[in-house]
Length: 470
Image 1: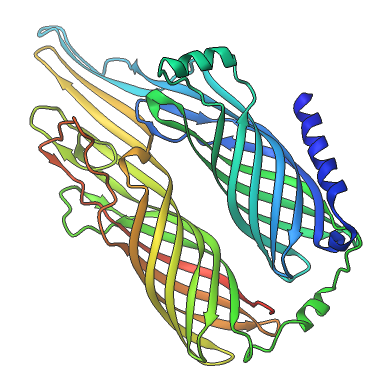
Image 2: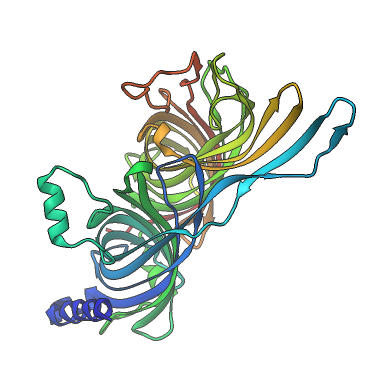
């Protein structure tokens, strides 16, 4: 109840502080929804199950112009986690010999329920920048940062102060911060009111479970309402009539989405790697330098990765050492990035356009998950045992935080509603250097430990190019 009252008071203060001159640029609203936890770190011994938790917020949005806005929020978010350890469950013997008194058996390793839970509740304050399409059914996409305060803290200030004096770290910390990315769809139901649905991705940066380097994260979905006092809404035709002539427009925005195929592009491949499907979505910006040449950038969320099937000491990459017994591994590794490209784009044509682009990108790692199966065999004089392990490990600690690379592509653009154009393209990209981290100090690497992995991707992209009015 205290949390709800605090959020309500913040919303009232924001509303009262707005002046009449800003009324038409300010919007107020609220949303409620659920989040699915995404605990990330070096979680390689147990399966961590996503659980649904509540989230809600009040927000105020300030329009910078017709396309861009700033949004500040005060809200509540609860992240619930559940750990399911891997346990061996024997199966019935499949062979038995009365004379030799030997047998062969098979067992399956799979998560078994245990009531070990980790729940965190936060008061969360995001600050976001959004782009909105000039259409009646409005698409908004953007991102920013958040700061959150832990509410269910069982430790007193005295206990924390004493630990700090003794140079002891206490977990969980009292606060968190991180990044948030969102996309929403809204539709007007009156002149001043819009209903919307929103999807969000958050990734925290503070460690909450030290032994696992565990950090908070979530995928969220919510529904809400937005009110713009004294707004002067334009119909779809009026909005389209304000779009500048394409020959005079220099700035364009393109909401994009696509399917992606990723693989290990390293020239040295001691292991058996193959391709793995993923996806990409985000917002691209074009600035026209002249009639044919444009500068292109943006922000994209990309799921890259690869598949791995070999005999290895690691589940997510090849490693061999004669001192240790290897497992037969069949896994897929998904690595999530927030990517910022910088390209030159060459276009030919007016109404129907063909283009080529090339440039570089910087990818900021968000998460990395390895999932699949591993087979272990045990043989001695009297028995033969086969264990199957279901893998669902968070392996982001093995990968570098930033990936630099190159990309190139081509595509076509088709006219749609005056100066808008559909965009269909293919993009190829690859890392400049390996994405695996160097060994930690004090550790003894395996005799053959593959650290040559690089991201390679090809993506089929769909988008809508929209001129930005100035």
